Image 1: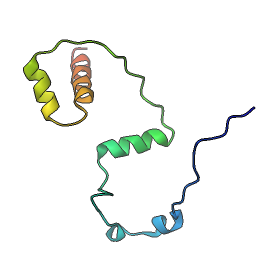
Image 2 (image 1 turned 180 degrees about the vertical axis):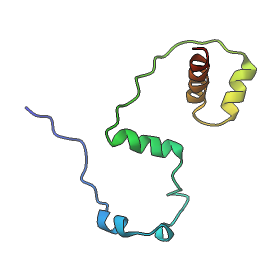
Image 3 (image 1 turned 45 degrees about the vertical axis):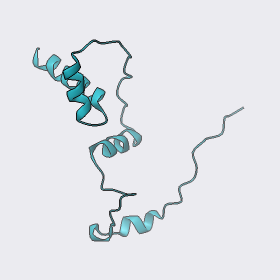
Image 4 (image 1 turned 135 degrees about the horizontal axis):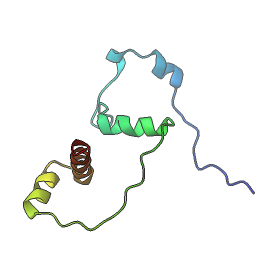
Length: 92
């Protein structure tokens, strides 16, 4: 027995969207301009290979280091991971 899809049909009027000019797009608080995080999610949904799953670990860092990353806003763990990757790549 085939499991039915949980995806719902799109109610978007794609012809209207495709015909819109940049000046026609209204930026609101509910629909803000795209940022890098939104774009990355769209790219993943369009069929590019997803990044390898992350693993959960317990890591001890200085309180001031953690506070600094958290002060940068949501996504601090992702930024910490990016710093570690950059260090790895620079060490080669």
